[in-house]
Image 1 (cartoon, rainbow, N blue to C red):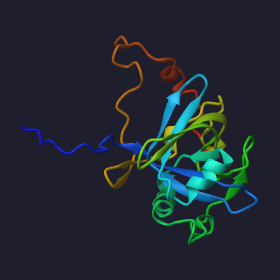
Image 2 (image 1 turned 180 degrees about the vertical axis):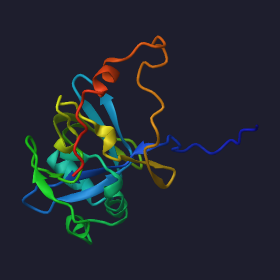
Image 3 (image 1 turned 45 degrees about the vertical axis):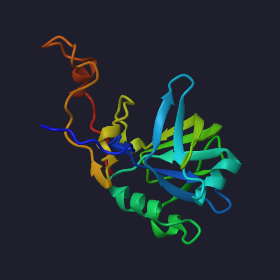
Length: 206
């Protein structure tokens, strides 16, 4: 097997495909699709998104210092692509994608009701790196869809049909291969999650 030396570029795949909502909920808020988003710190909780300065949403985020990361699912695949190729200068993405604006708790941007997870963010720093500027932000609140909560208040995010983006194509997540720490867990030792699984009520899927 031979290796081919490609030119330097962004080949870190797969990536989360998220919908970022921005702008004041009472004005003309917009949505843009971001694949370059990531977790950067646990304590305090912080995330980042990278946005081209020419994007319509860029000044909305820069001037307000706020945005919401909305996770995407199979049902949101069309909206995820549409909000990445259409500009808020030309269309109302909320209307065209039949998405519902709901108020956030700590910021003025709307959240997307159809998303299973909404992450409220306040910008702490902007790094002008080149083609993209990176917004570093602290997480000020997180909202989750109670359809994926069980009777023990365990959140089953992986039951929501999350999607990902890889080299120009969207995918749903595949079969589970294992859990964190499984490589060093003693054989035959059941995890706490496994012991509770039989007694847990299946989450709702309305």
